[in-house]
Length: 241
Image (cartoon, rainbow, N blue to C red):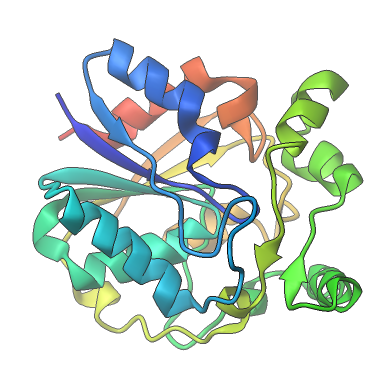
């Protein structure tokens, strides 16, 4: 049995993992899906990246979870990197799932192409409160491009505005890059949330990890909705000893 802690990406909360947790538990594993501070419907969005990280550290420590496989999706790649700095002794392996891997001193915003930087800035201006609201057409075409319209709409209804401050905070990652914790990168081949090629997830992000286990599968950025069973199989492979 493996204990997985699954950390969601932007616009999500822990409920994004409900189907994945169900299938992991059916396979005899233990799985937890905390919600990052400032995320979810009706939550105070006035948070920075350090507060987001601390909320996951507090969750793991509060439940006294040890020997865990810590997975971060998308934005949460930056969260699990900082969590690993704080509590490395509790983590068996890190899984970066379609996730940002930043160079030391960078922000998330620094790692998206110029046209997406412009879009994010426009979303913040439109919200008037330092948040980004995901447009349905972006969700449908770039994030969940392997699902029908009904699933795209029902999953879109679970999203909530994303706080912008964690996206622009510059991160000190020198300690992360010195940690000996084993790492995996899980990549979906139809993931176009970042444009494939020069700005894509793999190999651009994955290769920053140095030595890592590479696992890939068909699917979009949000394959936890479109194919949770297939995703569970690959999470188990990415997390095995």
